[in-house]
Image (cartoon, rainbow, N blue to C red; front, side, top):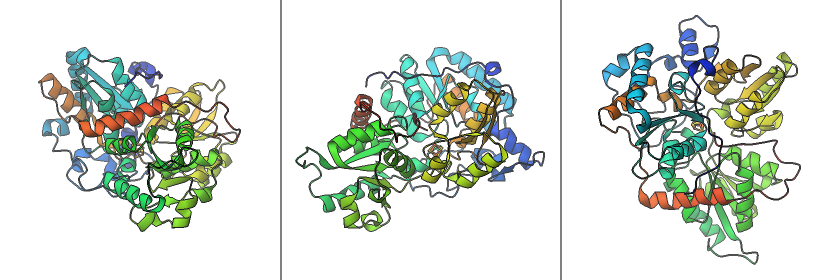
Length: 460
Ligand code: SF4
C-alpha cells in the first residue's frame, strides 16, 4: 500500500487546543444534575459505558434506536479499578503510561471522540487521516485507535503486520457500517446477477453491469467484497471522483452503506433521483422492481448515520431566523434536503478548515457530531459556533471509549499485554487493500461541471 499524501493534524498541547470546556461529557453531567437548561437525548449518557457493555444495543446516544447485529463484538468487563477511578486519576495514569511507552505507542483520536480522550491523542483527524497517521510511525509497536471498529480495521490494513492495532472498547462499532452486513451484501449481489446476468460480461463500451463502491465507513469484509468484484472504496472527499471512476467501468454503481452520501454525490453529478433506487436488504430485490433496477444508475444501500440523520431543514430555518447571516455547513451524510438547504456541505475536515479559514468573526451553524462542534467552539472563540441539533446527543458508539478503557489498554501495554487487538484476516485484507489502492489511484475528472457540491472532503 503506497503512502498517502494527506494533511495530518498532530495534536497540539491542551493549552493551545481549547480555551473553554469543550467536554460534551461535562455538559451532559450538568444537564443531568439540573445545572444546565440544555437537553440531552438520554440521561443515561451520564453513566459509564461499562454499564452498557453487557447489554444488547449500542448504548445511549444517537444510535440507541438502531439494531445491533448479532455477532457484533462485545467488550468484556472493564476491571473495577478503571471503572471507579476519578477523571483526574485516569488522566494521570494515561499520561504516565504514555510517558513510559514513549515511541512504542501512537494514540489516534477521531474528531468525534470525547474531549477527555482526545486530549491524550497524538493525532486528531478523520478515519482515513488517522489510519495514515500510523504510517508515520512504522516503528511503533502499538496503535491505539480511539475511534470505532471499522477505523481500527482500516488502520490494521495500512499498518505493518507486526504492529498491533488496539480498539480500547470492542463495543465501539459504527451503526452505519453495521447496516451493510457481508451476508446481506453477498445475497444482494446474487439477486442483482439474476437481473443483470453475467456480472463480469462487458458491453460494447467495455462496461460491466455493476461496480460496487463502498464508503470508508464500512467493515473490512465489505471492502474485501468490493475489491473482489472490481470495485473501489471512497471517502466523502473523493466520492465524486470515485463515482466517475466507477461509471467508466460499469453501467451502474451499487453504493453502500450510506444512502445519503451516495445520493448527495450522484445528484450533484446530475444523476436523476428516479435512477437511484434504494436497496433494502430485508426485501426481495431490495424492494425495487426489475424495471427500476434496469434503469438504475446508482443503487443505494439502505444505510445511514444516526448522528447525521438527526439534522433537519427546520433546524436550518430556525438558525437563519435567529442568527441572520449565519453560515450553515453540514456533513454530506445528512439527508439530501438538509444538504440542499445548507450553504455548504463537507466532511469533518472541511468544516474544521472552513472555520479556521474565516477571517472575520462569523456565526456558524454546524450539522455534524456534537463533540467536534463543541471543540471547535472552544478553539475559535472569535466565532459563534453552534450545533444545528439543539439536543446534546453524541455518536453513541464513539462515546463507548471512555478514559477508563484508554488507561486499561495503555497500562496493559506497559505490563506487556496487548488487549483488544483488531486483526483483519489475510483473505479479507488482500482484496480490501486492492479496493483501497484503486481509490488512491483514481484521479478526479479533468473538468468539474458547475453543479458540483461546493466542497466535500474526507471520511466522517
Ligand atoms: S458518526 Fe455515524 S458514521 Fe461516524 S462512527 Fe458514529 S454512527 Fe458511524
